[in-house]
Image (cartoon, rainbow, N blue to C red; front, side, top):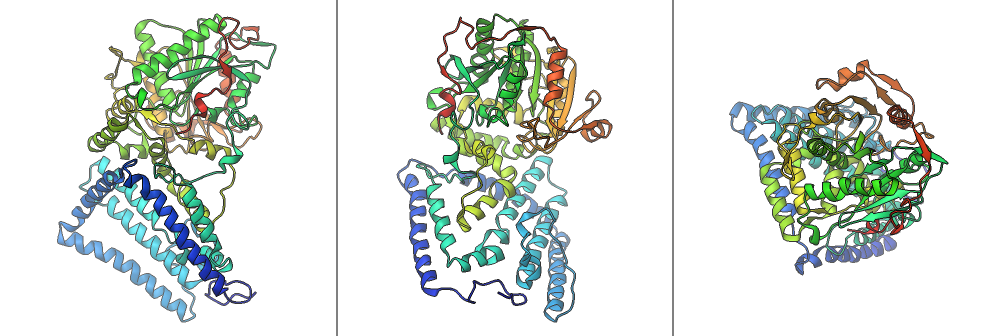
Length: 602
């Protein structure tokens, strides 16, 4: 079929089956009613509340301050209009030239990496090209309004930038059928069958509480304990908060000092034990390490009062006791990931104050201890927002896992939200099966006391590195932590920015090996040796706050950072002992790995 100039592609035969199209529109309306009913029913019955008004109110208040700066002065108000008007006039002039058959360069171009506008018709079709450029000019104008508003304090500016970005991403013409050439072609070609399938998927993605859980993968293809988290091992200890897994050895001898991994309780531990080819746990076992991993409970209202101190006592400290019983060893290497690493740092400072030296070395994966440069997550943390969040958590005893998952996804909404909205609900296609994204959607709840302490003491007050954090009546001082530290940052991290991790290095009292991995918060850590997918950088002692200066002096190394870490661990002591079976004959195994805590859904 030949395509007419500046006309969207239509189905073969030059038209649409009107009868089928009308029938599918009727089906779409019917299915849409089911989706709306599924969303409203729990709210009408009181099983769910509308908590987004707090977020909307904060966004309106923040953006109101931006508008106030520009509108409070007549000259600035005129400048506000002039900027946008000039851009639109230039675009209109270009469009008129193009309509007259003249060549007209684009007034603004999309980033070549922006997948939203990859379809050729965004440039070849005058209508869609005009829409695209109007959108890009408008978003650039809005971003400059925030950047040039001189009266904003840093926190308000960061929030305004974030909210502008969220609005811009949401209203992109690529997110709507009539303004996206690819979606329009597909809708016409399928007689709107794609929209019916998509609405059905949307209905299925609304849970019993009325939350929309956008599927990022195919859940039926990934079952924890069958396809994921299948490294052999046993749960050798458990309490209210953790199950401790000891993995079965795969070598005849093992390093004398065991390894304890403290994962985050936001999401689940098996990010480190996905498929065997990607499993960091399996790789460690194959390197001759006795590996223990904490699997956190998915808490409910009964654990509402479990705070950071309880997570420390019943988490890492309880695990150390169990490891000593199982192996007879009084020292361990400990590794913490994300907030699990923050808890590990807190535990180390507490142990240093108490004279407890059972942790021989500490490894931190994408972990923050200083939160001054904590990135866009700080957008959600100020006194007013925290009070509203704490009120909601008091009412049910915990924060829903979907709330935290949504916050993380919003940090990269053009990667983790809108592509799936378009693919799932407008194209009516199932997402690509991807284990990391399945894990990403397997969210956990957070107990009220724990989450409130974490947000206030870390993100709001940055208490740990300021020497103002108190745990179990002990004021913590990271400078008293003298054990060797391996501190891993990931270069494109949107949750624990590399600069934030870098700055945190200087607060430890012992030697620190700072390493930067390519990619982001997950892929930069889960970087299997065999794939040789991302590089890593090693360099001088981390000092100051300029990570870019450090990177200029650093050496870029091909492949995974895992072998570098293994060599570092072995440099601290390479004594071997016969391989140990889970429990060591002293602790009776409770159940097979990965245990039952990790399988509990939110």
